[in-house]
Length: 161
Image (cartoon, rainbow, N blue to C red; front, side, top):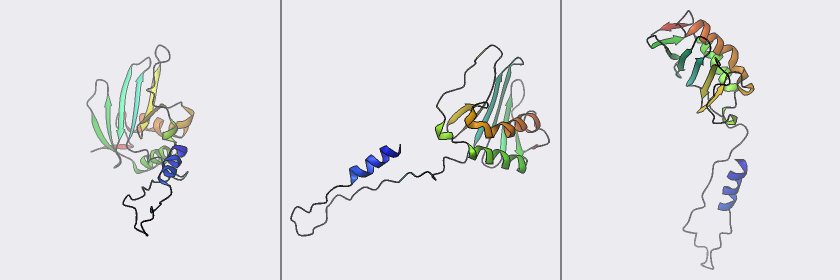
């Protein structure tokens, strides 16, 4: 990616010969390209989607956390509910999501690996990964708390709105 940007920037750099016209500026402005640095943020992680599907119990749960901390929770056979996440849990989830290099994740939907495979997946910044993926390890504890104590069913860490 950096090489591609550098190549585009170098393409725009060339000799601006005035062709002997006595200092008349060129009529075509030199394009400028944004530079990419290591400190360029890869995204905040919110909104974030957590899904839990499959397993022996046949889970089909989905939690969508918006930037305002409101979670939309759907679970097979139940009404969709909305609740406001506890501030400390939201802060923990946000901090964990910011530790993940979402851009490095492949664009691959998690698939069932064996019968009764339970897939817990997180999606942010357009990328999805299984929770056991090493690159999203920071998300393990907060997502587990989200699924067990907050969202499904809405519990003490998520108040109905």
